[in-house]
Length: 526
Ligand code: ACM
Image 1: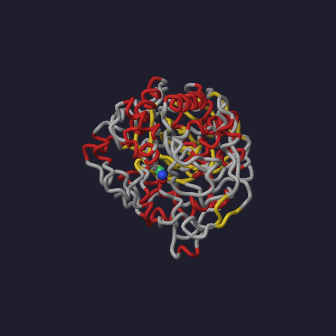
Image 2 (image 1 turned 120 degrees about the vertical axis):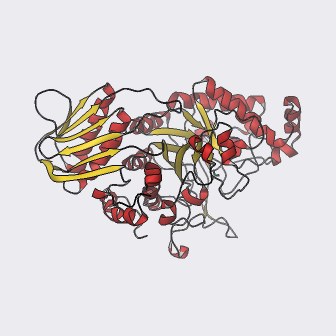
Image 3 (image 1 turned 90 degrees about the vertical axis):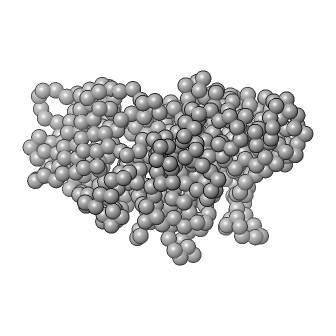
C-alpha cells in the first residue's frame, strides 16, 4: 500500500508524480504538435478540441516541426500491434516545463490518450477564458489492469446515443478503456439489425413499465410506452466517438435467456414454454428462453454477423446469465433437439450453444466473453473470456476457470454493482434494486482477492455495472455512477499501489468539482 499523498488531485492517482517549481502558461493560440504515426495526429486533434471546449484556448493540432514551440507536444515513439488479448500498452510520461511547455511521450496512441486526460485534469485548476496554465511536474504512469470498464444497460431504460457518448467521455476521463454496452434484454431490444427489422421495430417498445419496486405487491404500472433503439448509423457514431478516446466498445446481446423482446418480434426463435406476446413489462428472470434449434442458432449467428461489422473490438459479449433450463426440460421439442445432439442434460443445451458461438466468433477473429454462467455445463472453449459477477454464489470457482485458460474480468456484485444503494439510510436514497455498495467499499475492492496466486495472470481487470431497471434519467445515472466509478477507476488503474482512502477522498473533493463543472450530477458526501 502506497501511503504517500498523490499531488494535484488527479483521479485516478498516477503511478508517480513529481512536483517542480512554477508553471507553464499561455494565453494566445496554442499549438498541439504530434510526431509519430498517424494515430498520434488523431490524439492531438482530440486534445486541441478538448482545450478549445474546456478552456476556450485557441488550440490547433499540427505536425511537429523544428520551428515554433508547441504548447503541448505529443510524441508517439512506436506503433505496436495489440497484445494477444487485444490491448495496447497505455503507459505515458507527461512533463510540464515552465519555459518549453508540456510534452506527453508514449509508445502507443492509447498511452498518449491517457496522458491527455491527465493533462486536462492538471489544467483545470488554473486554465480558462482562453488561457492554458499547467503546473510544472513530471508524471510517469501506467495502469495496473488492462480492462478497466463500465457497463451500461440501455434495455431496461433507453439512453440516447448522445447520452451514451457522454457516458463514454466521462469514463475516458478516468482513464478507463472499456465500455460494455448491454444492448438487449427481455424489456427492450435496442439495436437495428437490418436482416431482422422487427427486432428494433417491435422489440424496442415496451407498453408499460413497473412503477415502484418489483418486490412490492400489488404491482403498479406507468402506462407510458417506453422505447428507443440505435440505428446502425448511431452505433457507428458511438463506436467512432469511443475509438477517438481509445475506448473499446464491447456489445452485449444477451442469449439464450433474457431474450423476450426478441421473441416478441420473432416468436419462432422462442422455446415455446411460455408464449411471449409482447416485450416484457416487469423485471426479474423469464422462463422463456431461445429454442436453440438449428434455425434459431442461424438467427443468432446472423445477428452477430451484423455486429461484427459494427464493432471493431476483439470482445463480443454473449451474456449467458440467468437462463433457466425449465423450457428445455419441459418441452418435447427441446427433448428431441437434446437427443439429436446427444446432450446429457438441459444445462448442456446452453453450453452446447455457447461452444458453437465461441467457434463462430473465433472464425471471425473475435473472442467470446460471457457472464460466469457460461462456465456451467460442458465444453467451454478456453479462448472464451469470463465476466465474473456472482460473488454471492460460492460455487463459482474463478480460480479454476482461470487455470483452465479463460481470461477473467472481475465484475462481482459485492463491489461493482452500481445499481445498488450507495448510502444508508437507503430510505433517503432514490429507489434502487437493493444491496448496499458504499464508496469506501468500492475503493476497498481488490480484483485479485480470492483468486489463486498462480491464476492471477488471467485477470484482465474489472468493471462497474449500471443496470437500469430503476435508473430512468441521465441525472440519476450520473448519481449512481459517480463518484463510485472514480473509486473503481483508481482500484483498476493503481492496483497494489493504490493510495489510501483518505488520500483518495481528499483528491475527490477537488475532482468532484471538475465533474460538477461539466454538469455531472454526482452524489456528494461519503
Ligand atoms: C447479471 O447481473 N445478471 C449479470
